[in-house]
Image 1 (spheres, rainbow, N blue to C red):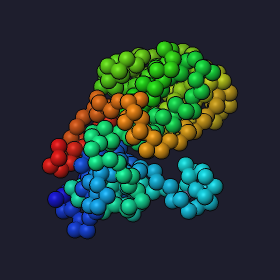
Image 2: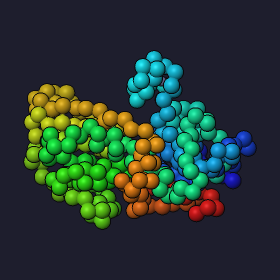
Image 3: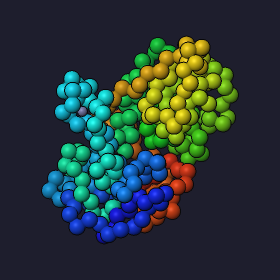
Image 4: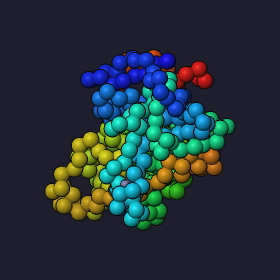
Length: 295
Ligand SMILES: [Zn+2]
C-alpha cells in the first residue's frame, strides 16, 4: 500500500498511513502548484469509506461556523478546507485518512468514472448561472478543464452562437465529439467581438484574453486566473468582472445522474498511481488517476 507525498518539486512514494478511513479509487491529478509540501496531493477523489461506502471529496468545504457561513455566504468562507491542502490529506494513495466532513456520500452503484467529475460539473453549472441567457449573444467559455467542456455543452444547448476556446487538441476533439462549437485560442483573431468571456481554467493568463472582449464586455471568473488583469484596461474598456456563482458538488453529481451532462470522454489521459510521478511536472489537462485493484 503506497501513497505519493509532495516533496520539493516532485512526488515521493511512501508507505500508506496505518490509520486510514478511506481507500481512494479515482483521483483527478491537480496542477503541481496546487498542493502543499509534505502532503498527499489530490483534492478531488472518489473513495471507498470503511463504514460509509462510496464517497466523493468536496474540494472546497466551507467551515460552516464562521460569520460568513452562518450568514449564508459559505462560498466566501475564508476557512475553507480542501483534501490535499492544509492539514488534510488528498487522494493519491491506496489508503488514506480524510476528515469525515470533507466527504459526500453517493449511492454504492454509481460508476466512479462518472462521480469523479462531479465537482467539475458543479463549477460548470455555477459559471453558466452567471451568464444570463439571451442578454448577451456572443459568449465564449475559455479553458481546457473538464469544467470548460461541460460549460461549453451547457452553453451550446442554449444558443448556437456560443463557443468554447481552448489550447489543447484533446479539448478540441472532445468538444467536437459533443457537438460544441470550438476553436483553438491560437486560431482566434483578437477581434474584440465577444460580449462575455467565461474563464474556467486556472492556467489561463487574463491579460492576453482581454482583446477578445468588446468594450463594455463582461468577464466571468470561475477559476482564479494565474495572471490577473490590470485595472486600467478594465477601466478604459469599461469591462465588468464578475465572480462565478457557486454550485454544490452534489448538484454536479445530480446533473450526471439526470443526464443533463455526460462524463464520458472527459479524461485526456488515464494513469495508474505508479505513473503519476513522471507526469507531475508536465503540461496536461483532465488527467484521471485510477487507484487500486478495482480498475
Ligand atoms: Zn466559514
